[in-house]
Image 1: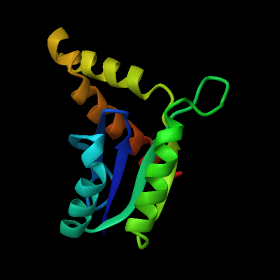
Image 2: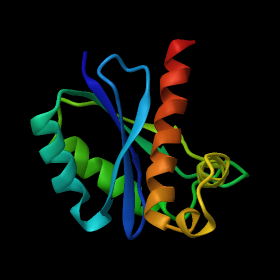
Image 3: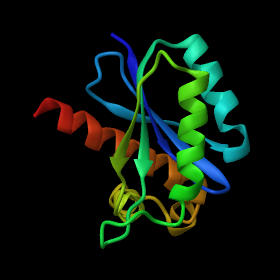
Length: 138
């Protein structure tokens, strides 16, 4: 089987997570500067079999798009053009940052480590991917 890649797109940096080849477990891959994201994803897809790319869709509590969607939509359009053979889907990412902080706290990370924004972005991508994987099982 192939991997699934998840993206927690941010204005400055983006967290990336990948599944195992059986698509059972989500794991953090890295955080990259958003300006380098397309090149990173293209290089990753060239090295690893990727079945699908999941992009976190930030929503407000009212269900409306958040401010970041105006940056995410053009990125997804470019990604779809650059990698037309790989489906790209959105997954609701409300509360992922809160869950990432809680997960890091429960994992026993010190306060200084929990304030590392790149790690929060990567953990958020893992949560987005795990949410997707669990929804696929049902």
